[in-house]
Amino acid sequence: MTTIYLVRHGETDWNAERRMQGQTDIPLNSTGLRQAEACGSALHREDYDVVISSQLLRAHKTAEVMNSFLELPFVVMEDFAERSFGDAEGLTYDERNQLYPDRNYPNQEVLEDFSERIMTGLEQVHQKYAGKRILLVAHGAVIFRILSIISEGKLDLGDKKIDNTSISTITRTEQDWVIQDYNRVDHLDKIQA
Image 1: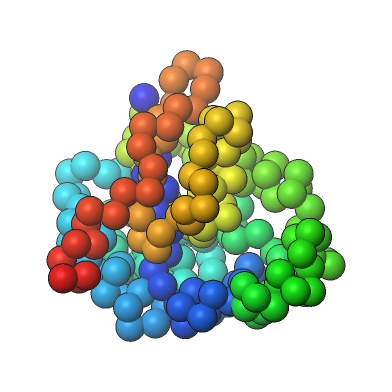
Image 2: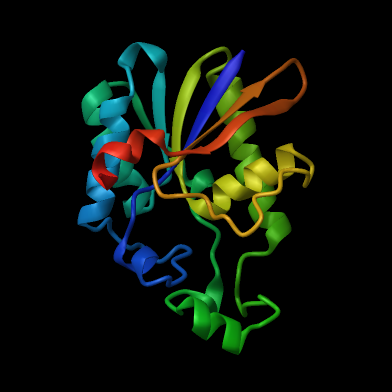
């Protein structure tokens, strides 16, 4: 059985300011580095086989920091880059709602194309690492979309977002992906105290 642990990257300044990042390449801030360290230090090398990351700096650095504790093979896959949000990138939540209340951002990546990109990447991971345990460090919209597609829209996060360095676990049965858990953040308790 293939198991993928979906990890959202650590916090950036734009996360803290509620700015839409998309494919704008924003680095982790000090909180994000601490989150990546807390996540990595809470994991055990023998529980995983490989670390895969988006190429975007915030995910790549999170994966690097986590992997400094694990020392596993490290792979970068552009399939798991954040969705491009076009003209909305860099705008705050309030600015986006004022300019684009329908969330139809000019020049954004088409949802169907985004979905196909990440699900094709997921299938490639399954084919290459069948039966393995993979830490996949990606982005909020990527993880949310994967969970939404797998659950056929039945997973309701409500207004909750995918938290920075949260872990969501999916497994592959004979034919389908199954969600085991999502948005776990218990490993962050020690930095929030």
